[in-house]
Amino acid sequence: MVVNPPTADPVPAGSVPVPLSRKDFVSDQDPRWCPGCGDYSILAQTQKVMPDFGYPRENIVFISGIGCSGRLPYYMNTYGFHSIHGRAPTLATGLKAARPDLMVWVITGDGDALSIGGNHIIHSMRRNVDITVVMHNNRIYGLTKGQVSPTSEFGKRTKSTPLGSVDHPIAPLTIALAAEASFVARSVDTHTEHLSATLAAAGHHKGSAFVEVLQNCNIFNDGAWREFTERDVRDDRMLVLEHGQPMIFGKERDRGIRLNGLHPEVVKLGNGITEDDLLVHDQHAEDPYLALMLSRMWWPDYPVPVGVLRAIQRPTHDQLMTEQIAEARLRYGEGDLAALLQEGETWTVK
Image (tube, rainbow, N blue to C red; front, side, top):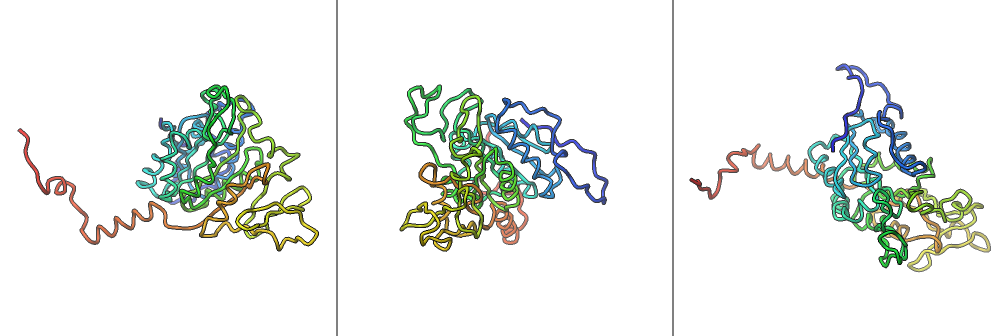
């Protein structure tokens, strides 16, 4: 379904565009999510950062699949598509190929992206399609009323797994890194300042950006991430990544991560251990080894990393296509579709 185009008065030719604000990206549709849903926060922070990118609304497109997150394009005063289950990255790839000048966002959920849409999202990332994927991860199928999802924890009791899930959960950031996404990050729906900054960084990135947002479904999976995201425990149980800074965490900023052989370990500063012994985060490292290690760290063995794990630059899919087409035109000319269809072995059917 194609969402209504942005509503705004046309800008006269030659005039200077008026700076936009958050309210300019709020559509006339009332959000229809359950009260208390984390999607409200993700929507609000997305609307908040959009003016900073400098794109006119008519050059921004939000594409979604199926699930509660799929409604988000209706609430953005931009162009948008509400597509079919798991295929939002496919539509986004085609759109960027045809209109590389557009800013394209893909809004998806853990089920939509990693189950039926797993193959599509993997290939959009390996191609480095210049889109920003925001995956709402609540560890459950919320729209269909509470079935196990690809990120549900082992042993999870749901309507589809009443005796507990026997499937090992997918690690979304590990998948993104293995698929060679050039920007990989994680944030939390309730950590609004961090979420806003993470979305801003993803939107400014040129290439395939994948952001996992740990999000609560207070109806079918309430408290999905509460054990490490709640305000009273998050300082001790989460690691906020900062490029070029040592990996320090804790309410007293007295713990950190250092490397012990091939494995990270949690250490307490003092008694001979200093910040110089800790790992320093490098989100621009070409090799993904550090980012992969961070993507595997999880509570209670480790603090859960949030922030940008990886941000590198490499040619985008649309850039490479444009260059290839230009080279073909120089070599073979503009081409003639009618001649192409009629060349070679042809015959007439009577």
